[in-house]
Length: 350
Image (cartoon, rainbow, N blue to C red; front, side, top):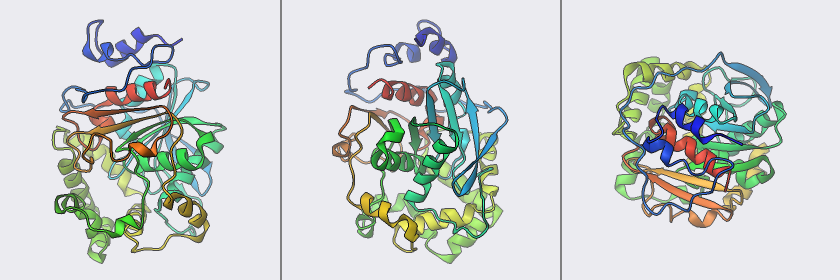
Protein backbone atom coordinates (compact mmCIF):
# COMPACT_ATOMS: atom_id res chain seq x y z
CA UNK A 1 0.00 0.00 0.00
CA UNK A 2 1.37 3.39 -0.99
CA UNK A 3 1.37 5.98 1.77
CA UNK A 4 -0.34 9.18 0.61
CA UNK A 5 1.30 11.14 3.40
CA UNK A 6 4.71 10.27 1.94
CA UNK A 7 3.59 11.64 -1.41
CA UNK A 8 2.53 14.85 0.27
CA UNK A 9 5.97 15.14 1.87
CA UNK A 10 7.63 14.55 -1.50
CA UNK A 11 5.63 17.45 -2.90
CA UNK A 12 7.02 19.67 -0.18
CA UNK A 13 3.64 20.53 1.34
CA UNK A 14 2.22 19.97 4.78
CA UNK A 15 -0.96 18.25 5.81
CA UNK A 16 -3.00 21.22 4.67
CA UNK A 17 -1.16 21.78 1.38
CA UNK A 18 -3.33 22.18 -1.68
CA UNK A 19 -1.41 19.69 -3.83
CA UNK A 20 -1.61 16.94 -1.24
CA UNK A 21 -5.31 17.49 -0.73
CA UNK A 22 -5.99 16.87 -4.43
CA UNK A 23 -4.20 13.51 -4.51
CA UNK A 24 -7.22 11.24 -4.30
CA UNK A 25 -6.16 8.77 -6.97
CA UNK A 26 -3.05 7.18 -5.50
CA UNK A 27 -2.82 3.37 -5.76
CA UNK A 28 -4.89 1.86 -2.99
CA UNK A 29 -7.16 4.90 -2.78
CA UNK A 30 -10.39 5.87 -4.54
CA UNK A 31 -10.35 6.82 -8.20
CA UNK A 32 -11.48 10.42 -8.69
CA UNK A 33 -14.48 11.29 -10.79
CA UNK A 34 -13.68 12.95 -14.11
CA UNK A 35 -12.75 16.56 -13.55
CA UNK A 36 -15.55 18.93 -14.42
CA UNK A 37 -13.37 22.04 -14.42
CA UNK A 38 -9.82 22.91 -15.24
CA UNK A 39 -7.29 22.19 -12.51
CA UNK A 40 -5.15 24.86 -10.93
CA UNK A 41 -1.68 23.36 -10.56
CA UNK A 42 -0.12 26.43 -9.00
CA UNK A 43 2.40 28.98 -10.26
CA UNK A 44 4.44 28.00 -13.30
CA UNK A 45 7.25 30.40 -12.54
CA UNK A 46 9.22 28.52 -9.89
CA UNK A 47 12.83 27.77 -10.80
CA UNK A 48 13.55 24.08 -10.28
CA UNK A 49 17.06 22.66 -10.35
CA UNK A 50 16.68 19.01 -9.41
CA UNK A 51 19.12 16.48 -10.80
CA UNK A 52 19.02 12.86 -11.89
CA UNK A 53 21.40 10.22 -10.55
CA UNK A 54 24.12 9.04 -12.95
CA UNK A 55 22.56 7.95 -16.23
CA UNK A 56 22.43 4.39 -17.49
CA UNK A 57 22.64 2.85 -20.98
CA UNK A 58 21.09 -0.24 -22.51
CA UNK A 59 21.17 -1.79 -25.99
CA UNK A 60 17.61 -1.68 -27.29
CA UNK A 61 16.81 -2.49 -30.90
CA UNK A 62 18.56 -0.05 -33.22
CA UNK A 63 19.80 2.08 -30.35
CA UNK A 64 21.92 2.25 -27.28
CA UNK A 65 19.50 4.22 -25.14
CA UNK A 66 20.66 6.56 -22.42
CA UNK A 67 18.19 6.89 -19.59
CA UNK A 68 17.67 8.03 -16.04
CA UNK A 69 16.19 5.66 -13.47
CA UNK A 70 14.77 6.32 -10.02
CA UNK A 71 12.87 4.20 -7.54
CA UNK A 72 12.97 0.55 -6.49
CA UNK A 73 14.03 -1.86 -9.23
CA UNK A 74 11.08 -4.15 -8.50
CA UNK A 75 8.53 -1.35 -8.31
CA UNK A 76 5.75 -0.99 -10.90
CA UNK A 77 7.44 0.59 -13.95
CA UNK A 78 6.62 3.99 -15.41
CA UNK A 79 8.30 5.18 -18.61
CA UNK A 80 8.28 8.97 -19.09
CA UNK A 81 8.83 10.17 -22.67
CA UNK A 82 9.90 13.71 -23.52
CA UNK A 83 9.13 15.84 -26.54
CA UNK A 84 10.79 18.41 -28.79
CA UNK A 85 12.69 20.66 -28.13
CA UNK A 86 13.10 19.14 -24.68
CA UNK A 87 14.89 16.25 -22.98
CA UNK A 88 14.71 14.01 -19.93
CA UNK A 89 14.81 17.01 -17.59
CA UNK A 90 11.17 17.70 -18.37
CA UNK A 91 10.63 14.94 -15.78
CA UNK A 92 13.37 15.87 -13.31
CA UNK A 93 10.75 16.87 -10.71
CA UNK A 94 8.13 14.28 -11.72
CA UNK A 95 10.44 11.27 -11.37
CA UNK A 96 11.27 11.64 -7.65
CA UNK A 97 7.59 12.14 -6.81
CA UNK A 98 6.73 8.83 -8.46
CA UNK A 99 9.80 7.08 -7.05
CA UNK A 100 8.71 8.15 -3.56
CA UNK A 101 5.48 6.26 -4.23
CA UNK A 102 7.38 3.04 -4.97
CA UNK A 103 7.43 3.26 -8.76
CA UNK A 104 10.41 2.34 -10.88
CA UNK A 105 10.68 5.45 -13.05
CA UNK A 106 12.56 5.22 -16.37
CA UNK A 107 13.18 8.39 -18.37
CA UNK A 108 14.94 7.72 -21.71
CA UNK A 109 16.47 10.11 -24.17
CA UNK A 110 14.63 9.77 -27.47
CA UNK A 111 16.61 8.87 -30.57
CA UNK A 112 18.77 11.80 -31.61
CA UNK A 113 18.90 13.24 -28.09
CA UNK A 114 21.38 13.25 -25.24
CA UNK A 115 23.32 10.04 -24.68
CA UNK A 116 21.15 7.86 -26.93
CA UNK A 117 23.07 6.63 -30.00
CA UNK A 118 22.40 4.46 -33.03
CA UNK A 119 24.25 1.17 -32.90
CA UNK A 120 25.09 1.36 -36.62
CA UNK A 121 26.22 4.33 -38.65
CA UNK A 122 24.34 2.84 -41.61
CA UNK A 123 20.90 3.04 -40.00
CA UNK A 124 18.68 5.67 -41.60
CA UNK A 125 18.06 8.51 -39.15
CA UNK A 126 14.30 8.15 -39.15
CA UNK A 127 11.97 10.34 -37.12
CA UNK A 128 8.60 8.86 -38.11
CA UNK A 129 6.11 7.98 -35.39
CA UNK A 130 6.22 4.18 -35.57
CA UNK A 131 10.03 4.17 -35.45
CA UNK A 132 10.04 6.17 -32.21
CA UNK A 133 7.26 4.05 -30.74
CA UNK A 134 9.18 0.86 -31.48
CA UNK A 135 12.14 2.36 -29.63
CA UNK A 136 9.94 2.34 -26.54
CA UNK A 137 8.92 -1.28 -27.09
CA UNK A 138 12.60 -2.21 -27.57
CA UNK A 139 13.46 -0.43 -24.31
CA UNK A 140 10.82 -2.43 -22.44
CA UNK A 141 12.24 -5.61 -23.94
CA UNK A 142 15.82 -4.68 -23.07
CA UNK A 143 14.86 -3.99 -19.45
CA UNK A 144 12.83 -7.18 -19.18
CA UNK A 145 9.55 -5.33 -18.62
CA UNK A 146 6.36 -6.97 -19.83
CA UNK A 147 4.41 -3.72 -19.59
CA UNK A 148 4.60 -0.27 -18.03
CA UNK A 149 2.61 2.87 -17.48
CA UNK A 150 3.58 5.14 -20.38
CA UNK A 151 3.45 8.89 -19.82
CA UNK A 152 4.57 11.62 -22.18
CA UNK A 153 4.06 14.90 -23.96
CA UNK A 154 4.68 16.11 -27.51
CA UNK A 155 6.74 13.46 -29.37
CA UNK A 156 6.64 11.36 -26.20
CA UNK A 157 2.83 11.46 -25.98
CA UNK A 158 2.64 10.37 -29.60
CA UNK A 159 5.01 7.46 -29.04
CA UNK A 160 3.14 6.38 -25.92
CA UNK A 161 -0.22 6.54 -27.71
CA UNK A 162 1.10 4.52 -30.65
CA UNK A 163 2.34 1.80 -28.29
CA UNK A 164 -0.99 1.84 -26.44
CA UNK A 165 -2.94 1.56 -29.71
CA UNK A 166 -0.83 -1.06 -31.50
CA UNK A 167 0.59 -3.03 -28.57
CA UNK A 168 -1.86 -2.54 -25.67
CA UNK A 169 -0.43 -5.59 -23.91
CA UNK A 170 2.75 -3.55 -23.31
CA UNK A 171 0.96 -0.51 -21.84
CA UNK A 172 -0.63 -0.80 -18.40
CA UNK A 173 -2.00 2.74 -18.53
CA UNK A 174 -1.41 5.94 -20.50
CA UNK A 175 -0.91 9.59 -19.62
CA UNK A 176 -0.97 11.73 -22.74
CA UNK A 177 -0.51 15.49 -22.85
CA UNK A 178 -2.46 16.80 -25.82
CA UNK A 179 -4.67 13.75 -26.14
CA UNK A 180 -4.59 11.60 -29.27
CA UNK A 181 -1.50 12.74 -31.15
CA UNK A 182 -1.19 9.87 -33.62
CA UNK A 183 -0.17 11.44 -36.94
CA UNK A 184 -2.78 11.40 -39.70
CA UNK A 185 -0.74 12.02 -42.85
CA UNK A 186 -3.79 12.57 -45.03
CA UNK A 187 -5.28 15.10 -42.64
CA UNK A 188 -1.92 16.87 -42.38
CA UNK A 189 -2.19 17.77 -46.07
CA UNK A 190 -5.11 20.06 -45.28
CA UNK A 191 -4.64 23.70 -44.16
CA UNK A 192 -5.46 24.70 -40.60
CA UNK A 193 -6.76 28.03 -39.25
CA UNK A 194 -4.09 30.74 -39.69
CA UNK A 195 -3.49 31.16 -35.96
CA UNK A 196 -2.81 27.45 -35.65
CA UNK A 197 -0.49 27.48 -38.65
CA UNK A 198 1.37 30.40 -37.11
CA UNK A 199 2.14 28.35 -33.99
CA UNK A 200 3.68 25.70 -36.25
CA UNK A 201 6.10 28.12 -37.92
CA UNK A 202 9.18 25.99 -37.25
CA UNK A 203 7.56 22.97 -38.91
CA UNK A 204 7.53 24.86 -42.20
CA UNK A 205 11.00 26.29 -41.60
CA UNK A 206 12.30 22.75 -41.23
CA UNK A 207 10.80 21.91 -44.63
CA UNK A 208 13.47 24.16 -46.17
CA UNK A 209 17.20 23.66 -46.46
CA UNK A 210 17.65 26.86 -44.47
CA UNK A 211 15.80 25.18 -41.63
CA UNK A 212 18.03 22.13 -41.85
CA UNK A 213 21.11 24.35 -41.78
CA UNK A 214 19.75 26.14 -38.69
CA UNK A 215 19.38 22.83 -36.87
CA UNK A 216 22.93 21.86 -37.78
CA UNK A 217 24.44 25.13 -36.51
CA UNK A 218 24.84 25.19 -32.74
CA UNK A 219 24.21 28.91 -32.34
CA UNK A 220 21.06 29.01 -34.45
CA UNK A 221 19.77 25.73 -32.99
CA UNK A 222 20.24 27.16 -29.51
CA UNK A 223 18.36 30.37 -30.24
CA UNK A 224 15.60 28.67 -32.22
CA UNK A 225 14.82 26.09 -29.56
CA UNK A 226 14.87 28.72 -26.81
CA UNK A 227 12.41 30.81 -28.82
CA UNK A 228 10.12 27.80 -29.06
CA UNK A 229 10.29 27.35 -25.27
CA UNK A 230 9.34 30.99 -24.75
CA UNK A 231 6.45 31.01 -27.20
CA UNK A 232 4.78 27.70 -26.37
CA UNK A 233 5.08 28.11 -22.58
CA UNK A 234 4.27 31.82 -22.16
CA UNK A 235 3.73 31.65 -18.38
CA UNK A 236 6.75 29.49 -17.54
CA UNK A 237 9.44 31.65 -15.92
CA UNK A 238 12.37 29.31 -16.53
CA UNK A 239 15.93 30.57 -16.05
CA UNK A 240 19.04 30.27 -18.22
CA UNK A 241 20.41 27.30 -16.30
CA UNK A 242 17.21 25.31 -16.88
CA UNK A 243 17.34 25.84 -20.62
CA UNK A 244 21.09 25.24 -20.97
CA UNK A 245 20.83 21.95 -19.09
CA UNK A 246 18.37 20.68 -21.70
CA UNK A 247 20.12 22.30 -24.68
CA UNK A 248 23.13 20.09 -23.99
CA UNK A 249 21.00 17.14 -25.18
CA UNK A 250 20.74 18.77 -28.61
CA UNK A 251 24.47 18.24 -29.20
CA UNK A 252 23.76 14.63 -30.16
CA UNK A 253 25.29 14.01 -33.63
CA UNK A 254 21.95 12.71 -34.96
CA UNK A 255 19.80 15.50 -33.55
CA UNK A 256 19.38 17.60 -36.69
CA UNK A 257 18.70 14.61 -38.93
CA UNK A 258 16.04 13.17 -36.62
CA UNK A 259 14.28 16.50 -36.07
CA UNK A 260 14.22 17.42 -39.75
CA UNK A 261 13.00 14.00 -40.85
CA UNK A 262 10.28 13.96 -38.18
CA UNK A 263 8.71 17.21 -39.29
CA UNK A 264 9.16 16.63 -43.02
CA UNK A 265 7.66 13.15 -42.76
CA UNK A 266 4.63 14.54 -40.95
CA UNK A 267 4.00 16.87 -43.89
CA UNK A 268 4.58 14.06 -46.44
CA UNK A 269 7.74 15.84 -47.62
CA UNK A 270 10.02 12.93 -46.67
CA UNK A 271 9.57 9.20 -47.10
CA UNK A 272 9.42 6.76 -44.25
CA UNK A 273 11.02 3.33 -44.29
CA UNK A 274 9.41 0.23 -45.75
CA UNK A 275 9.95 -1.71 -42.53
CA UNK A 276 7.44 0.57 -40.78
CA UNK A 277 4.72 0.54 -43.46
CA UNK A 278 2.56 -2.14 -41.77
CA UNK A 279 2.41 -0.07 -38.59
CA UNK A 280 1.72 3.17 -40.40
CA UNK A 281 -1.13 1.56 -42.32
CA UNK A 282 -2.73 0.51 -39.06
CA UNK A 283 -2.19 3.98 -37.58
CA UNK A 284 -3.79 5.61 -40.64
CA UNK A 285 -7.06 4.02 -39.53
CA UNK A 286 -6.87 6.00 -36.26
CA UNK A 287 -7.00 2.97 -33.96
CA UNK A 288 -8.68 3.20 -30.59
CA UNK A 289 -6.73 3.33 -27.35
CA UNK A 290 -8.31 0.79 -25.02
CA UNK A 291 -5.99 1.03 -22.01
CA UNK A 292 -6.81 3.24 -18.99
CA UNK A 293 -5.93 6.81 -19.92
CA UNK A 294 -5.65 10.26 -18.43
CA UNK A 295 -5.29 13.06 -20.97
CA UNK A 296 -3.94 16.47 -20.01
CA UNK A 297 -4.09 19.81 -21.78
CA UNK A 298 -2.20 22.98 -20.93
CA UNK A 299 -4.55 25.95 -21.11
CA UNK A 300 -1.76 28.22 -22.42
CA UNK A 301 -0.34 25.65 -24.83
CA UNK A 302 -0.89 27.03 -28.37
CA UNK A 303 -1.34 23.46 -29.65
CA UNK A 304 -4.18 22.62 -27.27
CA UNK A 305 -7.29 21.98 -29.34
CA UNK A 306 -10.48 23.76 -28.27
CA UNK A 307 -13.26 21.79 -26.68
CA UNK A 308 -11.66 20.60 -23.43
CA UNK A 309 -10.58 17.29 -24.91
CA UNK A 310 -13.79 16.65 -26.84
CA UNK A 311 -12.03 16.56 -30.22
CA UNK A 312 -10.18 13.37 -29.38
CA UNK A 313 -12.42 11.81 -26.73
CA UNK A 314 -13.81 9.18 -29.11
CA UNK A 315 -10.36 7.64 -29.64
CA UNK A 316 -10.16 6.47 -26.02
CA UNK A 317 -12.53 3.59 -25.31
CA UNK A 318 -11.18 2.34 -21.98
CA UNK A 319 -11.39 3.93 -18.51
CA UNK A 320 -10.71 7.62 -19.03
CA UNK A 321 -10.25 10.99 -17.39
CA UNK A 322 -9.34 14.39 -18.81
CA UNK A 323 -7.86 17.46 -17.13
CA UNK A 324 -7.04 20.95 -18.38
CA UNK A 325 -4.38 22.78 -16.36
CA UNK A 326 -4.96 26.50 -16.07
CA UNK A 327 -2.04 28.79 -16.76
CA UNK A 328 0.19 25.96 -18.02
CA UNK A 329 1.88 25.75 -21.41
CA UNK A 330 3.33 23.05 -23.64
CA UNK A 331 6.05 21.58 -21.40
CA UNK A 332 3.44 20.45 -18.93
CA UNK A 333 5.43 17.94 -16.82
CA UNK A 334 8.15 20.50 -16.09
CA UNK A 335 5.76 23.38 -15.59
CA UNK A 336 3.34 21.40 -13.40
CA UNK A 337 5.19 18.32 -12.12
CA UNK A 338 2.81 17.62 -9.23
CA UNK A 339 -0.21 17.57 -11.55
CA UNK A 340 1.59 15.31 -14.01
CA UNK A 341 2.68 12.89 -11.29
CA UNK A 342 -0.84 12.82 -9.92
CA UNK A 343 -2.14 11.95 -13.40
CA UNK A 344 0.22 8.97 -13.54
CA UNK A 345 -0.99 7.74 -10.16
CA UNK A 346 -4.61 8.17 -11.19
CA UNK A 347 -4.19 6.50 -14.58
CA UNK A 348 -2.67 3.48 -12.85
CA UNK A 349 -5.85 3.15 -10.77
CA UNK A 350 -8.51 3.79 -13.41
